[in-house]
Image 1 (cartoon, rainbow, N blue to C red):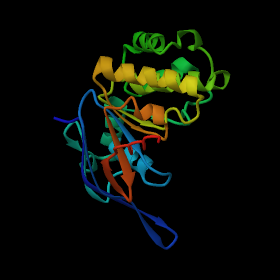
Image 2 (tube, rainbow, N blue to C red):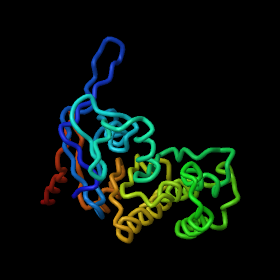
Image 3 (cartoon, helix red, strand yellow):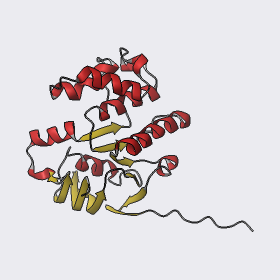
Length: 231
């Protein structure tokens, strides 16, 4: 069974008196070990898609299931539990708490769950993402690439089945972005985590097992146009 299932998902927003349809009947199925890239113009609903997939919001119509559970049928607390234990989020702007060290930021989801194996899990993950030497540093003391690696460690700390990444290389230079993509790809390959990544980065789409385009509120397979041969 797929880890993420979205069926006929519709989401409206109100902008003044205007009714904006962000998603107009989206269907998506993502299995373990898949890296799915979603592309599309700004404002096309890509972030909305991720928010619904991770239970940060619920659809106006349709169904979103993670590990077979309909997120809209869960309470607010139950959806928060799903996000803590089964879904990891990686954001373009990192969303690290500025007053907490790298290790404390990574620890936070486990602290909320009162996990007793926190220290060992944090140490293992920080070594995995190459951040052991920065464990006691505050986010303001880190480079952009280091902040994103810390954010990835936090997203992975509960060993989620589903990882959702919103422009994970958007604030990074090309070399640092490639390093972050390598890390995300390794995570998918080694752990079987399903990754859905919203991106404008052409290099990122080349790492994906599938590339989908969100346009006019609907998803479809993206096939790059063939280059015209030079004469």
